[in-house]
Length: 287
Length: 346
Image (cartoon, rainbow over all chains, first blue to last red):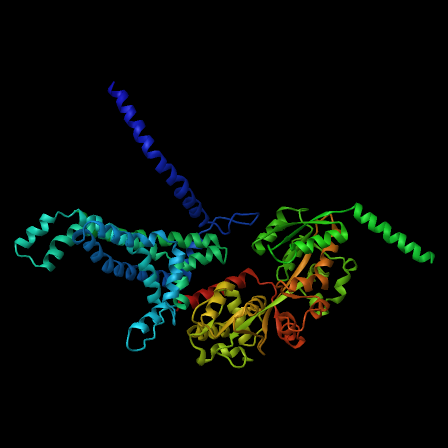
C-alpha cells in the first residue's frame, strides 16, 4: 500500500518535472553541446567542407591581444551597467514596496515592466532617435532651458550604457522589490523606536535583508550585458566594438562558427569564474 | 532565290526544332538580381520556348557548395569574377561557346578579357554586370565634390566619416589610399597606419544600405564609403549625396554568368545568357535600378542622365578602377585580424 503511494508520488513528480527538463534538454542542452563540439572543429561541417578536430580556436584567443582587450572592455561595461542599474533601480523598488500602496503601485509597476513588452530592437532604435545630435533630447532640453545646450550622446560609451541600463533595469527592480516586500515593517519600526536614523536603518536593516534579491538582480544583469552585441553595435558606433560584437561577427559576417563558438565558451568560462569568485559574498548575503 | 528559300526553310526548321526541344533551364543566382524578373523570363520563354526555373543562394560559399553537391541540377549560375577561377579549378563550370552568344561582340575587350573570367585559358563567365565600391559625400557639407580620397583624413570632417564594417573592404580601401594594388598589397603596415589614422575620424561604421541612408539623411555623416548601385538608389530617393570616384581609384567588382560543366541544356543556357546581356533587357532593367551593364551597347542605350551612364559610363573613370581578384584564405584572415585589432583598440 505504502509502496503504491510512493510510486504514485514518484509518477507525479516525474510528470511535473519532465516538461521543463525535456524543454531544457531540447532547447538549451542540445544546441549548446553542438556549439561546444563546433568549437573544437577546424571548419563548419556543412556541405563537403574539409574539417578535423583542433584546439586552434581556443588558442586563437591567446594569440592576439585583441580578444582579451575586448573581453576586459566588456566586463567593465557589465560592471558599469550593473552599478548604474542598481543605483537607479533599488530606490525605485524601495518606494514601490514600502511607500506606495494600492492602485498607484500597480500603475507604477506597469511602467517598470513596460520595456519588457516592446521589442528590444525597437527600444534601441528609439534611443538612437533620442540621443542623436539634433535629436529629441537636444530639442527638448533647448525648448525648456534658457540657454542652448549641445547634446550628442549618440555613438559613444554613455549611449551604450544608457541603452543597456534601460533594457535591464526591470530585472533589478523586480528582484529587489520582492526582497524588500518580504521585510517585516515591524522590524523597521523597531529600529526606529530604538533611535536608529534613516541611514542606519537602510544600512543595518533594509540592505542586509534585501541583499539576496539585489544580488540576484545584479547577476541577472551582469551576465547578459557582458555578452551584449546589439546595443553596442547600434549605439556605440566607432567605440561600440565589444567581445559580444566580435562573436556576432564570427557567426554573421565571417562565417567562422568554430571560432565564434570557442569565444562564446571562453566568455562562459570567464563569467562562471567571476561568479565563483563572488560566490562567498553571495552566500554570505543569503544567510 | 533558291538560296533564300533554303535559308527560310532552314530557319523555319531550326525554329521548329528548338520549339520541339523546349528545355527547362535552372538558374542559380542571388534572389531579386535581374535574372528572375518576371517580364524578362516570360519574354525569353516567348522568344525561345525554353522555360526558366530559379534557385537562390545567400553567399558565394553556398553557391559553390550547391554546384558541388548537385551536379546536373543547374544550367546557368551567377559567379562573381573573384570566385570564377575557384569554380573553374574545381571543374564546376565549363567554357562558354562564344559563337552561341551574339551579344558578346558588344562587350568591351577589357571586360571580356578579364583574367579571372578567362580562368583556365578560356572564357568561363560571360561578363554581365559590374559596379564600384568608392565613396559618396553629403552635398550639404560639400559645395563641390572632392577629387581625392584624402578627404577621409581631412580634419575638417572629423567625426563625420564612415566606412563599412568589413575587413576586406577596409583594407582594400586603405590600399587605394596608399597607392597600392588592392589585389597584391605589398605594404600591409602602410595600410594599417593609414587605417589607424582614419579611426579617430570615424563616427560609426555602417552595415547596410539602409543604415547608410539613415545616417546621411540625419546629417550624421559628411563622407562615407558606398557602393555605386546603392548610391544610384539613394540619389533617386532624393538624398543629398553625390558619388565620387577619386583620382586614386576605386574598387571594382564584376559578375559573370557561367554554365556548369554538368549542364545538359547547353543551347538553352547560352541563349539565356545572350538574352541577359541584350541591350533591350538591360535598358528595361536599369529603369528599375540595375548595376552597370558589361555590354557597351546596353550602357550606351541608357538615357543621358542615368546614373550608370553619367558616372560609370565615363571611360576615364573605368580606367581608374581596380577589379577585385580572388583573395586567398590566408590573406583574408590577415586582413580580418588587422581590422579587428584596430576596432578593438578604439
